Amino acid sequence: MFEKLKQIQDLRTQAKAIKSALSSETVQGVAAWEKIKITMDGNQEVKKVEIDPELLKDQNKLQEEIKNAINDAIGKVQKVMAKKMQEIGGLNIPGLK
Image 1 (cartoon, one colour):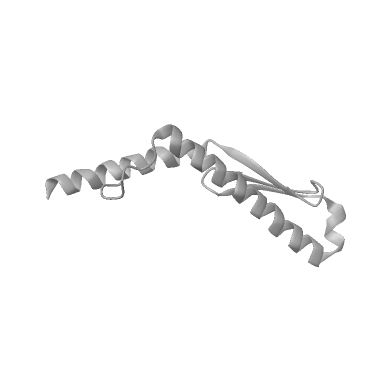
Image 2 (cartoon, helix red, strand yellow):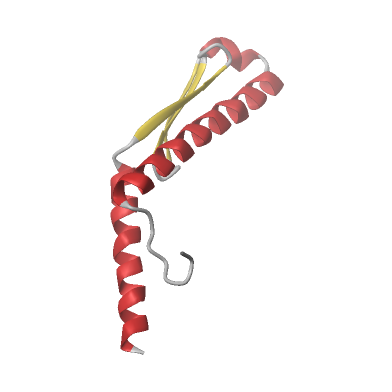
């Protein structure tokens, strides 16, 4: 039983290390010819949104392009996450090897 508790504690420690490493990473998702920029950290938390005032005239276009910029940023963050997981060694989850 104590071995299982130690494995859970080790897993938590690994997860915290990965989260900490990812928080220092940033990516920028762009859309609408870089008129919309979404800055996101490695934990997929949006840190900054920039919108060219020209796009404020067309609400439907603006909504679509914000969605595209967020999806672009998420795709980039997922690549950063995968790279960090490899660098750190990933999560060592007993029974999943």
